Length: 67
Image (cartoon, rainbow, N blue to C red; front, top):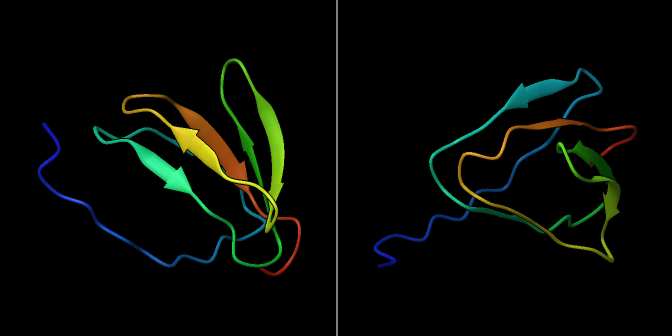
């Protein structure tokens, strides 16, 4: 059962990072782009896209430009 929704505005750097977390994440880019890779998918997200990351899904991400 959903108990909490948290919104966060973040800026990502060109330095890549890999992590996972115990919660689902909906990524909604506002400007610029974000590269994200999972074991199954690789996308460059921009303001025309969204991406759902399920809980415990390891993902690698970085930005190529200002975001």
